[in-house]
Length: 220
Image (cartoon, rainbow, N blue to C red; front, side):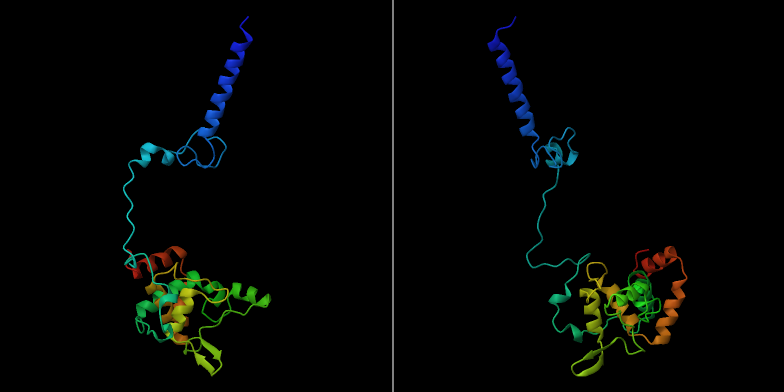
């Protein structure tokens, strides 16, 4: 029979070893654990120090710099946005691009031909939420102001699309600046122009619409 002291030492060693393993795998330890489980039996590769050591250095961009691709300047930083002219005004390709974007992003609220009669817009109206506006009778979107009923300027329309209004989400993180101006081109078209271009794409398959949009964006 082994001495009692020997058994005590074995038990103590086992407890210390178990405590060490638990400490080494404690949740939140960036070197050993993802923090998702009390003990990570199989650790994720990107937490391995060998992999981390091979990552390239990450340099921050210069202060006050702006990305030239894949980014945008927020409409909140644009002064006198209502005075901005539409750089795509009069471009028939921009109107087609705007129609494709409208079908994908706006028609469920504003209607298939921008008459303010979309299905989701109707649900909002049923719950006493202001129905999304129609795109006007050739004078763009008309709003009531303190000074009377006036047309929304291209810059204001661009700002609303970019920053969102009421239940309409902000599209500046989702669509490029040129995409948003293409939507403004659609808004400012005449009823006949707008309905013709929208009706021409409403029965087109989603796949074909996607290919057309990529082509107009110069991505094909």
